[in-house]
Figure 1: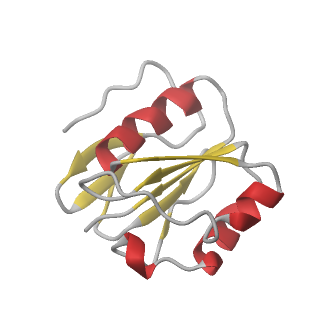
Figure 2: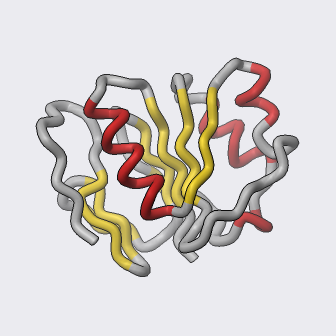
Amino acid sequence: MKFQPDHLDGVNVIAKLEAQRIWVHQTPFTTSLVVPWVGDAEAWPATRPQELTPAHFERIAAFQPEVVIFGSGPKLQFISPQLYRCLIERRIGMETMDTAAACRTYNVLVNEGRKVVGAFLLA
């Protein structure tokens, strides 16, 4: 699925999502990924929601986003709030959806100028 942003200067965008790849601008990634609104995207060492720990979300909190969009893989899978308690305590919102929907939502939010981090699982 290819995504076409309207106009996004200086921020990260998800250009395309394939079964085993996420494209940030022109760069393909084959691992689960954390994508801040600005700066470098980085590998996220998990492939399934069951592998996540609070440390995964501590790393995301370090970006100091307004909101986190969590893509749980090809199907929507909610995770325990205990895993992202560090976000709750810092009043950082988190929305969970399947990875394709999360990529689209992430692009909308960065296009609005929001400080958003996408955390996308590739299963």
